[in-house]
Image 1 (cartoon, helix red, strand yellow):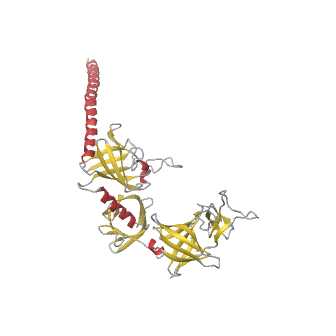
Image 2 (cartoon, rainbow, N blue to C red):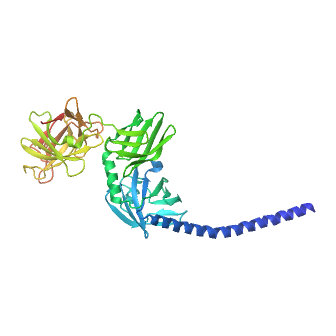
Image 3 (spheres, helix red, strand yellow):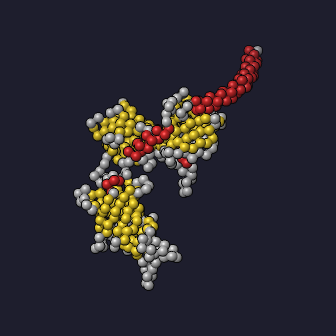
Length: 425
């Protein structure tokens, strides 16, 4: 009898438990849906509550493997206005946005935005592009911070409320100023009076790399209006260093007692140094003068190459990270009007007897303090070959190279075996 009773009670309890679970699920589902709806509405209200918007440290690349960017975002009436250091730091773009339910509250930039979406676009030959996101799971929020996670690449980021009265234009002017100051790649890491090591802050890819003691730090950083923010802090002893302030006077980044100071080798020269008249040394006996002045585009120099009293206009590029000049192959206008389609300045190797073609190879000019000259050296762009010369190939009205009776190219001018250039006093 006792066994029958226990069996009966077991069946009753099982049925009761199933009934309770069913009732609880029914009761739980409705409030859960309502809670998600309320969260969505609350997050949207929070986003739009900031009068001057939010700043976002945005990280690209799976596992933070690429660079960091700074975005200013203002949300209003279902639209977002964005500004940032992605392409043009002076441009603003407005598009649609929404907070949707999906698998939890999700911030979606659902209309194409010319500031935000280039970070998530594909490129020719790169199906993943910069590996950025335009949809973010909202993890949690306070009144002044909203914590996000990219839906595709899983990088975590934070929206931080901008103080009331923040001018976006002034913020971006400050950011641009910091970027212009950080125009050198190599830095010394100094703690108090001790130099811990030398590392790099590479602006082109927006990443920090340094080994301090037995620990290597490799991470993206974001530029702000006052300095930089690292994705994670550098830890030395029991201290953490993450938010650095730029000092233009000594070209350093500082937080507390840790200073990151630009290292300038003797070979590094400012762009202003290169402006002036230079004499180019080649295998030719004739005097060749190159006059340089500032170009109309940043980090470029316009050159007038004087050969046989004819001035040929060239364009050279300046690398602020290394302080050297680069002379690439390029089209050149013929000032004598002898060649209807102009001239093509082509990199070449006199030693190998090869012409490489426009866009293939170039020469760097690096300042040598001891020799008081800018030494010419191959850029290393062509594997297995070295550029040492340039030849001005003439082009005719049929847009083809002009050839002589033997079928050889006609050169408007030649610069064989370029060795160095010296300033003309």
